[in-house]
Each structure stands twice: as C-alpha cells, then as structure tokens.
Image 1 (cartoon, rainbow, N blue to C red):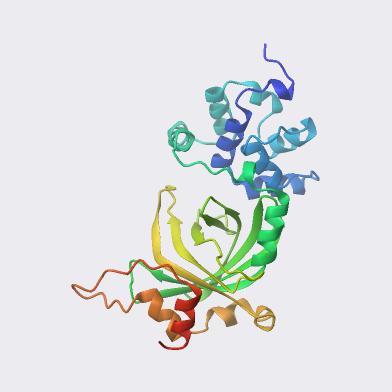
Image 2 (cartoon, rainbow, N blue to C red):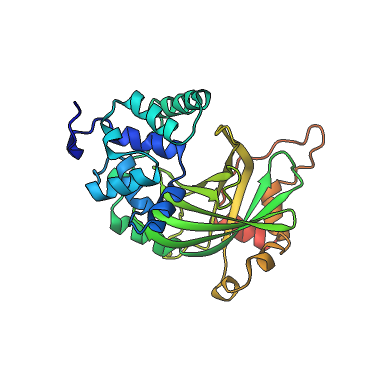
Length: 300
C-alpha cells in the first residue's frame, strides 16, 4: 500500500515536469483560480525545479485542474505518466511521444541553475533595469528581405522570472503572447506562449545580457528560436534588435507601433546588406555594442 504523506512522494519534481509537458501551466492555473483556489505559475515552477514541496491543499488544487487525485502522485513514475495521460484523454501513441520528449529533457546536457543561484534581490534588480516596452525587429532567415516587428513589454517580476507580454503582427491581425524571461549563465532566455489555445504556438528568444553601465537598458539584441507543434526547436531569425520605447510611446496602441516602418539604420545591421543572390547569402556574426549602434544611427 502506498504511503500518503507528501514527503513520501518519490520523483515529485519529475512528475510535475511531465504534467507540465503534457498540460499548459497557464491553463492549469486558470482552472485553479476559476475553481476558487490559489495557485501561481511561480509556485508550480518552484515544484518543477525541486525547490520545495506543496502543501496538501495546493496539491489537491493542482490535481483537480489536472483531472487526477493526490494519491496518483504515489504511483511510480511510469505508472503516473500513464495515469495522467489516461485522465486527460491522451492516446497510448501520444503518451509514448510525450514520454520520449520527457526522457530526452531528463537526460539533456543543458541545465539551468537560475532557481539555485538567482536571489529575489537579483530578480528585482533585473526587472528594474528592463521594465518597460520595446519594439523588436528580427530578420527572418527563410526570407532575407523580411524584418518582423513585435512589441514586447516586461510588466512585473515574480522571482525568479520577469513576466512579459508580446504583440506580434500576423498578416493583418495582432496576436498576443505572454511569457517569462529568466537569466542563464551568459544570456537572458525569453519564452513566449500564444494566448490562443487553438494551436501550440510559442517563440523562444535568446538575448545578450545587458552590458550597459547605466541603471536602465536602452536596447537588447540576440537571436530568435521558434518551436513547431512537434516541439522541435530550430533557429527562426538570424538576429533580433530590441529598442526601448519612451513613456509617451508606451501609451500608444500596439497596432500603431507595429505598423511603423523599420528604421533604415536598424535594417542595415540586421540584414548586413545581404541581397540573397548567389554568393551573397552569408550574414556576419556580429555582437552589437553601444558604439556600433551609435555609428549606425549616425549613418557611419
């Protein structure tokens, strides 16, 4: 017979990680809140990282949203994976796909230590430097003549992440994303998820950590990764440049900002003057600096 104390649960963090691979954390939290409970994505992330265990009321709220029972967490890992899939109408074929993804993540060589090394004070300092709105310009790899514009807002801090919102033009409509930014060893990782539940659509941005000495950040740069529905991540943009908006510009409607033409000086270092013709298809690998941005603005 299984023991029912929360501290007796084996592989709790791994079971949470599989649950969140299978089910959207945002949707789970919304279900808990709709049912009168209290649960945040930050709390779930702490469970996933193995930082702490839940109280029994919190675990019960999570289980109700995930269509399982607290006692299911006392099953061994494989049995738990089968149980939560069955409870959510996931077929055996789909379960094997999810299980394969989960194991590949378990044994991947990449490990983020942010939960262990980044303090609440560090998170607060990062947010104070970044908070505000940015227009982001990224060069699309499969169409070297196209630069995509998006609006990114860093809105609040929930240690160890900064909460973000993004507005992106898709043809004539504006798609809204929400997400989280957190520091890695040398960069910032921004993961955005589409709010429309009809399909899986999210983008990951790898940004250079700000090198500016001032308290505020005027711009960021990096690359964009995107994920297809099979969760295979691939490079989607050669580089991205994000420029902070003034307080007056922040009050403008997102569509008004997104329809602005890309500044010519910005287009030049994004595209590297690549024409796409034979023999002229390679982008320089360059790290933007304060001086290079100043020279571009001045047309030098």
